[in-house]
Image (cartoon, rainbow, N blue to C red; front, side, top):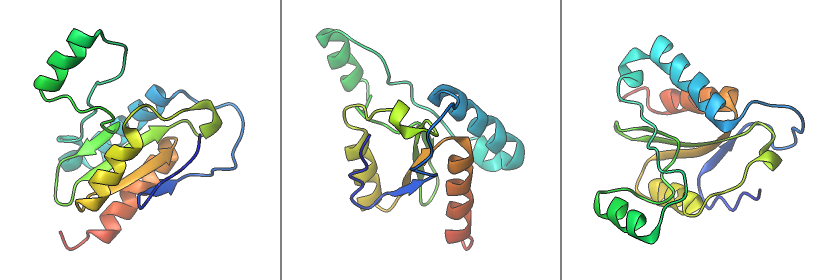
Length: 137
């Protein structure tokens, strides 16, 4: 997995290799943590389910319904938005899906705090950085 990040931040140890939880388990850990520790953010934090294979007709209908290819795993719609794509701690066990990098690049260019987090601890660190950077919000 390569990081052609063009402006968005990467959190976590890119040199780590080894056993690690799946992306979905890392996401679940983040959502549990934020809902417990920061309930005001946890109340609006969301994961848009846009994974999976679809027929051409299904993809067309989903796009008309507002689905966006590559939407990040964690989106907190506040000002500025927090947008985070979660990958496995050992990022060699993950891969970019179509549109994910472009989504992060667009979010960054429009003023969002956008990043990639390699695991739950990295997502947590990213969110804590977000809070520091926006403490006057």
